[in-house]
Length: 567
Image (cartoon, rainbow, N blue to C red):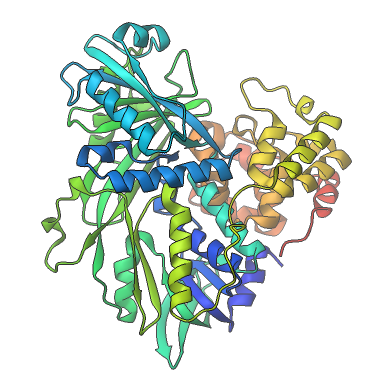
């Protein structure tokens, strides 16, 4: 039985302290916080975990430098404190990174003024990063020749944090934490209805993958449906003082644009005087984000979006040849759910351009429903703690918060892992250029679970082989994903547990013979064909190279069987 099936069995006809609806960052962190303090928790999402807004962020952990323009000093202070705590707690996953901003002569702020803002940002942030720098035009030309300095007056450099892997994988780390603390969690489980009877909620759920419907009960509900919180509350009759408006943002993933340094974010003001960035993603660069008012959470990248971003970056960087749509490897598109006070009437009443990414938590104490509005990845730990406080206040007793529901393993555990990796010469098993050491990657992605992966590689060296070439994923990682990461569709792995779809061109994926083995490892030989057909949009559209690819060997299956069984 798979991990997902095990957890659906627990949720079916179960009785919980809290049912959490929505498996994005807000739902995942709430589940981890509550389960870590002893509550019985069920977490569901009608799609994959982090499949909506939480997979479309900028991958940045930042205090909101741009919010200084609206004098939201308290919000910036709180976000910087959250950023600092995340960077301390996730030293392998979140890296301090320079933001290198080139300021045009006709831009909204002269360099000296922006420099004062950067200094204030550093002070408000409790000196949690390296101090900022004021940059002359000549220094920018010397340090990053890719920037076109024709109209540049100068610049600044300040620092924030960046996720080394992708945002969706970071969200799933909280789902894993919740599971390890005893929570039941299942993706592709939809809330059909919820009715309060006596002191409990009776929820009818549907397994989206099989169509099965079943019941579960809970004393309280957390509505963490992100862009869909208003719709979800209407479904069970809860009214709130807050609501959500939507701002669409897109990113374009292209080949690396920087020349001298690849570990910094380039920042520019676009023609509308809004900041946009060039963010490193391994061997790629991510351009974005835009900010467009929309009335629906369902969005897509348009030709106008692409043209706008390409024009902006070509005007500000000295690229030969200039970027075109043919250079785009992947697109990211999502909505920011921005929280406002309910005033009735149409959403167009809101001046959405001045809204920040703050969150609001509202509790209906009579119905025992907690709703999370808005928010961003940087503030996730505060959201988890605040939700736990609300659940405790409406009658669910919780244990003392020991802060053990988040963060990476202790330094001694990390030291022991790298000692073992050195002894077995793990990093010497691969010779691919321009990739990080394998020991660093396994530790960052899997923590304590990486010890069992070392054992599997010792028993079968083929477990350390890349399966898909340019995707940079080794065989043991696929077996670990199949065992413990609740991969239900091939897209879950390709887009969210990994970032393969974001950094590998479609043509390379379609010509990868190793994708067949990936599917068999993740879903078994009996289900691999169905999942491949689902991924490519039909059985007749599965590329021949994939269809005829190799199968997992008996030796690697035996080594994988030695991994610890899932909870």
